[in-house]
Amino acid sequence: MANNENFFERVYEVARQIPYGRVTSYGAIARYLGAARSARMVGWAMNGSGLKEDIPAHRVVNRKGMLTGKHHFQGTNLMQQLLESEGVRVRDNQVLDFDNYFWDPAKELP
Image 1 (tube, rainbow, N blue to C red):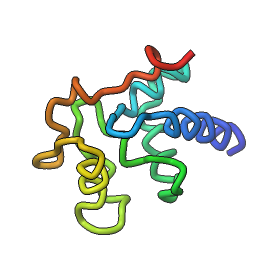
Image 2: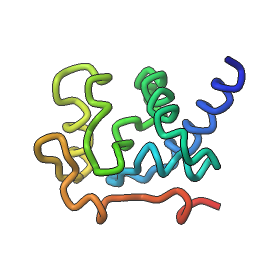
Image 3: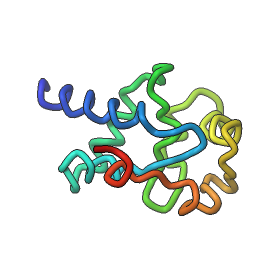
Image 4: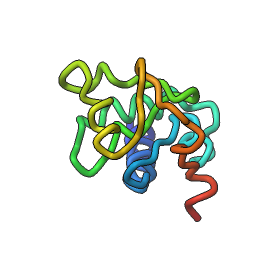
């Protein structure tokens, strides 16, 4: 479990740096952390974040821009509402113009 906890903390460190009004994917975080095949573990980390205020889990979506983590938020559309409040356009549980909103930690972080 200690290894998972360490990995989760590394995921949270990356997630905390996602800029307001931008999104990234589970896979992009996994690749940045050197664990390219661990996108699902990033998803578990986001689920385990407990919606802590300092971890913007709503900004992490799947590789196609789908709000696959939305069922972990209170309320039916909270994830979408949080994204839309930041100016991210969402329709049918998918980020519109995903490429324009996408933030790649591998390109943006040291």
